[in-house]
Amino acid sequence: MKNENKFTEIVKRLGVRHLIFFVTMIVLAIVPLFVNSYVLKIFQSAAINMIFGMSLNLLMGIGGTVSFGHAAFYGVGAYTTACMWYHFGWNFTSAFPLVILFSAIAGLLLAIPMSRVTGRYVTIITLSYAEILNLIMRNWTKVTNGVMGILNIPNIKLFGFELAYKDEQYWFILVLVVVSYVMINWLVNSKLGRNLQAMRDDSIAAEAMGIPLFSHKVIIFTISAIFAGIAGALYAHIYGYIDYTVFTSNLSFNCISVVVVGGLGNFVGTIFGALFLTILPEMLRNVEFLFNYRMIVYGVILVLVMWWNHSIPGAKIKAKLRSIFNKLIHRNVESVEEV
Amino acid sequence: MSLLEVNNLTIAFGGLVAVDDLSFTMERGQITSLIGPNGAGKTTVINMLTGFYTPDSGEVKLDGELTKGWDTTQYVRKGFNRTFQNIRLFSNLTVEDNILIGMQHRIPYGSFLSLFPNKVKNTCEREAREEVTEILKKIGLEGHRYDKSTSLPYGMQRKLEIGRALASKPKVLLLDEPAAGMNPKEKVELSEFIKSLLNDVDGILLIEHDMKVIMSISDKIIVLNHGAKIAEGKPEEIQRNPEVIEAYLGRGGKQHVDAGE
Ligand SMILES: Nc1ncnc2c1ncn2[C@@H]1O[C@H](COP(=O)(O)OP(=O)(O)O)[C@@H](O)[C@H]1O
Ligand SMILES: [Mg+2]
Image (cartoon, rainbow over all chains, first blue to last red; front, top):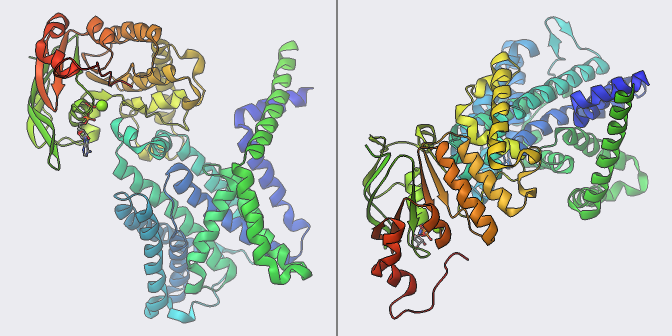
């Protein structure tokens, strides 16, 4: 009984979503104890995609802007840390401030044209911006090593301590997932986050309430780009090899899928979206009779999930689950009062 | 000094002169109403008074201060706020959050302090939420604080929009057809409510089609037709004005056009 009350209290303090998030993180944290290194690699990748997906969800779900070029920021982060190592022998920790700086600049530069356009121009500008950055990655050979890419990027080093093992690396990424999640929630539940959501819902009314649309757009693009850049930097060190082909529109679209599957503005959803969409293709790859059709199956599943998210039966079941959950909590609250 | 002074305001879209050399004043503690057939340019006046449109010529003075060169955020900070003819609430936000958005320029912490927990942020947010309670009481939505704004019935949405504008503590409150779509009983209530708002704001500019509402609460009425002012005066004077009657009924007394629907 006592435990139950405590549980209720925690749920009420945290909110259901946060609770699900932290439970999921704990479950994910013990994954390395049960899986082999091949599977762990997939989980590493999923965890990086969680940060990447949350960064885009911040932009799409809270900022109300679709970006079809999010891979650009991811690439800037990856190249920053890789180049710092390649040219100057810097490790992850020393390059980290520059990862933040350069991805922030990349976000800022895109924000300026973006704050002046709507509709199809958003698509065109974000796509071409990413394309331009991709061309730079490919052709600025002196810095990026061109089409050869950068090889043998070393493991992440934290103040001299090298994360040499996959599980250590994985736990480190998970810590960053938690940090990103917490920071994003701080932002969302602040005046800035509220103003951004108002702009998303109705930019004219938001302007009429005195919200400075331009500066808010710039801020959200910049912050979103920073988180994407961090994800990219992690990728560079975890995989040890990058070239321009990694950061194409394909990656941007995968990231959009993660956000849409998880739900706009729902950051816990993004966690599951990233898990699901990273693990699913690998699972399909291992089903022999499906191998040749795996992209088709992947596509069909994606469509089904999105349909489910926006369908009436999906909404009904979600509402039902929510009301059951509320009832459970409510019952516990009553029992608190009886005591 | 008048609360608001509008001098020779003019704006054209392409060849169409939407507002033509309009001048009027608003006095403190009064409801000034703007009426006229659909397309007369009433909403355009609000759009110019709140910085959404830049007039081609003319000037506006709030408390003697020229509004020239202000951006939209300044208009709000200096004391203008408005509602919209077609309700524009933040549809995914709660009632409380909608009010907080109206209040946002008075919540004294910025984007940087938004990014992490800190004392300033916590205090500001708590105080703001306390103030929301008062506003909700005023607009009669205490019970709906955590409801999604668009789940409210129509009349409440209108009131929420007014509450949101009130939350910015405007000097001049501009209401664009607040009674549209309400039934007669609601309209009577709304009239009383609008009148009571004079305790909170210095002056109200009311656009409305419903003559009962207009005649019962206006201190002064300005009549627009094709962008130009054709009459100005107290309700009784306007009711008798032949030009107004003609603008509304048409030459030869055609059928009354109730432009409100
Ligand atoms: N942004 C705009 N672009 C072009 N024409 C406009 C614009 N805003 C208003 N108008 C025109 O100005 C005239 C006055 O419109 P409006 O102020 O909305 O009238 P009212 O509110 O009195 O019904 C209309 O003919 C309308 O089409
Ligand atoms: Mg109008």
